[in-house]
Length: 307
Image (cartoon, rainbow, N blue to C red; front, side, top):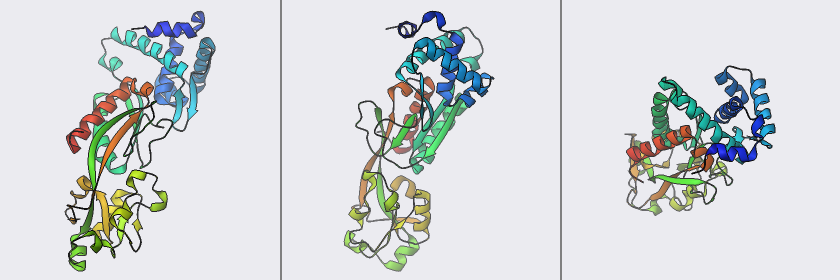
């Protein structure tokens, strides 16, 4: 196995390299902004910028590029960070302080709202308790996995990425099913087949804002529907259904927790989907990202069953 320092030397003017500059770059890569890195290092942000620029001059290329979530490493920057991690590990191995050896850095996770609350949040809490220096940002959204790579360190959705540049893990399967409130069903009478749904108002995502093809299912369940009562939040959809506004197409594992909701045509009106977690290989090699990824996999299988 090659030594990270060896690959680093191939690209850099060795005499100009400073180990403290490498550690500054590592802090900037973990925290995504110079200001946040500066707070961790107890310097000002101009010092961080200056040290990164000095390292770029020594290595002969850009190490960081701007991205929607903050700074991201270039391939050369990832090479530099491999060397920085080796330096950091060597220093930590000499210390008896367990906090010095603890994981640290910023990890961003995007996921659909319900999965975020049911799986990602408890997994993140476990990591945070074990590693207080790992900072987590949890962003709820329902979208297609970005084609050129996630904008977060870990991107969770219901669409499997086909990009060879990304690493994809199946977390768990789940079902969408129809639910209505008890009072709604008492008022409208029994529903025996999909034909009986024709005159009922479905509750689901806002059509004009739904970006995920795998979730574009409402016409499959409600052919010839009179309209749609849409909400971008699944919690809002549940509230609408509970209030008797219509029949909702909801995640089964989530809807079953609400006592006022009753399954509708549960043996024939279901859709089978999966949750997928996607990350860039370079991000997944970061120990703090790997720790969060592992925690999410364990939590998903504990809460939703083995994938």
